[in-house]
Length: 371
Image 1 (spheres, helix red, strand yellow):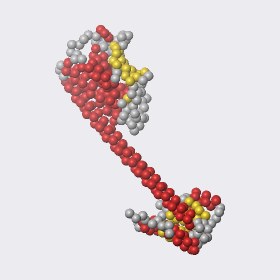
Image 2 (tube, rainbow, N blue to C red; image 1 turned 180 degrees about the vertical axis):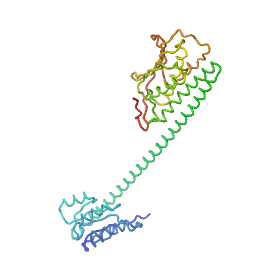
Image 3 (cartoon, helix red, strand yellow; image 1 turned 90 degrees about the horizontal axis):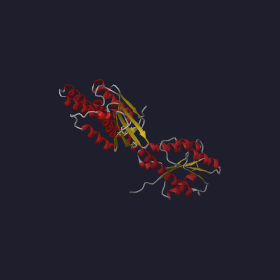
Image 4 (cartoon, one colour; image 1 turned 45 degrees about the horizontal axis):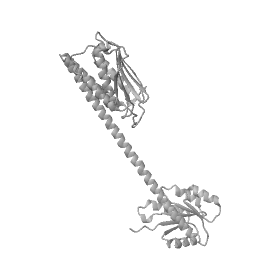
């Protein structure tokens, strides 16, 4: 493909010198357009910018300083105000360096001193080539920056859409699990056999523990993070409302604001549900008593403890027990890489789990701070 001949607009009121520039630059592969004044030069640039034809464009301007009407600096200022204006090489017969500084500050791409014989024309050619390369680099940089900004905008839009979809999914999953928990509660209420009622109540608590995570994620500012003290507070409130009448009225929580990923939060919630329900059933055979849930940070580990002040080792074995709760706790502890121990010094029953704290990489925001 043939390269287009670059066009130089030479703005100078000296017709003889303009003819020398025309001849000199034409031999060097340029098309030269002459304007005898600043006003005429500005008209050329505006007209070239308004036309659709590439052939009619002005690629670079050589601008003389001293002209009647608008002088070079005044013309330069107006050229720079034109959107998409071509680069300007400022030309003057003056040796005053302050003019060069003023012109470059005003936006000129280069500056050179002319003579009346045209000996400066080779320098003008070099300056024009440099101005064109500089303009090409600037255009390429602007196009690259525009593409980067466009890519960032597309990524931000996709990320926002993904977050919205994830929130909607968590909302719907949470609602569905809550419906299942409610159905299990209704079924347990109408069950005639105590074993069936207990099994349904246990299943309801396990489903509610998972549902609570999804409800928290739906309202969280960061979908990658679940704040454990907030989650456990809501989970225990669910247990107070749903389990065995007023026997949960003395259930307490002491937990630090620790961030954890949602999958591990589910495992913690299910363990708490199982151990709390076990304490409700067996710790106080003659009524209700306090049950304490505690979550603390110890170095690089988290310590989760569920304790009661009940009968401890004197608890009678329930022949109806299937051991399902113990198997669930063991499975969730494996998921957390946790050790499960019993505190022999506690007067009642105190089960504690120690598991590593894994830092959570924040998503959109890490501002879901707990109070």
